[in-house]
Image 1 (cartoon, rainbow, N blue to C red):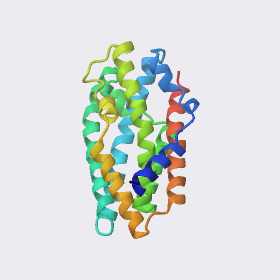
Image 2: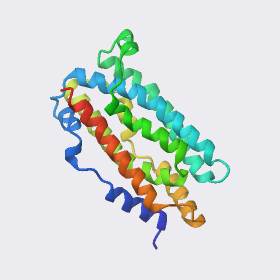
Image 3: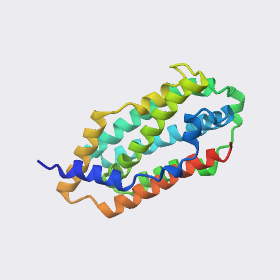
Length: 221
């Protein structure tokens, strides 16, 4: 039995899979050759990304609460996840050796912050159902990166489980979130609210900004 929404999510994720060469940093973390200073920059950049994405997801949930409750539930769960991830991020920042004063004076890199800036743009301008499809495709890539980093931090950098908790959180599969995404996409398909072409463009740009995040950090090494 076919499931239109699930099939669409799978197809879109496959079509938007990035070129492995678009991420120069994660392979270096994986083999232990990335310097700790770059890990510290990664931590600092995420300290800007996480709260920005959380606010964007809350705005999307608010926008869709009345007309698209399935999407609202999905974005609310994402926002809650960002809050939990943010709590785990502090341990990674400390493990990288970033002092509080250093964190306060850190100047974020434009190439890294283009991703959350675009998520904020989507929160303001895009149809919520289209954003669900685009984000789900992007998250599958992000989760794989996090799983690789979490393993490498333990194996090559001697980080504790607490320090790896941020990446463990995102690396863990979430069947519940997947079901929420499927329900949101299916509801939009049923109501004729999903613009697959536009959602694909959103996903393509998200992947490009994701690649910019990693390539910018990769240039620091």
